[in-house]
View 1 (cartoon, helix red, strand yellow):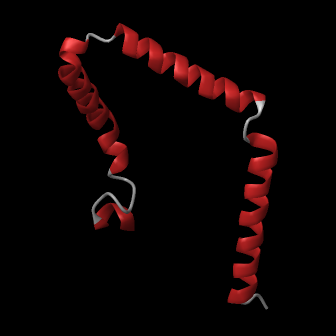
View 2 (tube, helix red, strand yellow):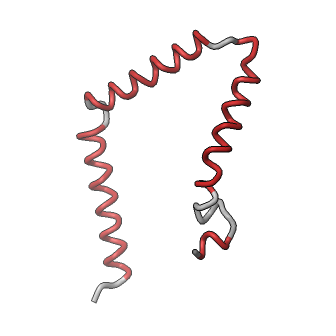
Length: 88
């Protein structure tokens, strides 16, 4: 029979193995470095092309667009939505 202690040991072992795999195989790999590099280039380009006199309006518009597009999905997450969506 599986006990709570056995489940806890299995969960701890899985977390340790997962972290070990990430640190040895994924972190600082070629793909990881290319993603970080692309993010840096995109953010640097955005900052250089940004009309800094209108930064508040641009950021507000972007946050309103994000909220409008993503609010329907956020409501379906049990901790963020109301209790009715968590039960369904």
